Length: 248
Image 1 (cartoon, rainbow, N blue to C red):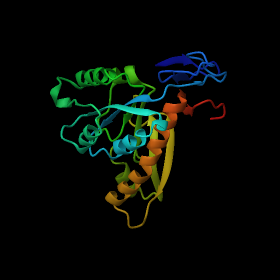
Image 2: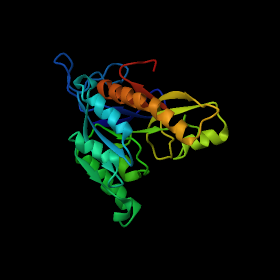
Image 3: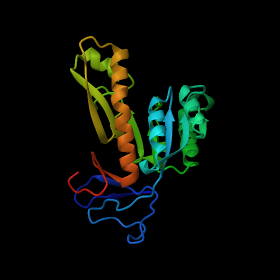
Image 4: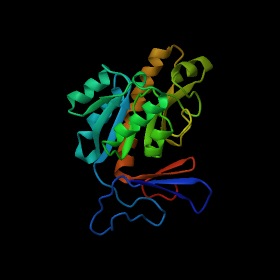
């Protein structure tokens, strides 16, 4: 589960993610350490993945979760589009899938309500957007705010939106990369979990740059989803703190 409180040291909202605790006998259930961080978490954490395409990020998570020590179970994969390769990858792995198309609902709000309700059926500890091209709304975030992660193919806050690599090339930057962040109400504005840097080559086009960003993005996503699942995390203002650390 997750709780929201006010950090006594500041005016920022504080989200502490408990991730369905199951503690060792020496640690009472639900105990947090003196810094306010989670002292113990359940393994595996239940994760729902949302996607709109080929599912290469999903495949990286599926491969990692095959190792019990990773601490993650992919319990469902959802999409806004039918017949995409990502759903095939999930089905081959024996993971339940679902499709919710926006055009099948009378309004975007109705779709958002339905998406939140459907994801909630799987009781996830984390929800991961892995190439999901739809923005979620208030109804979804009211259920999963603070534990909905997205991987973006640029170094935020630069180049938000769906054309990150193209925008980076057009601007002429020498480095770009990938950003993992906690989704909030804005467009790619949430608190940053991790970033990795990818140099921009002189002969890059959108396709080659996008592919090299993906190659860096996959291991970053795998590493940090696993760490957050195993150690717990908290969102404090603009900072995401993983596990029991006072210094960040």
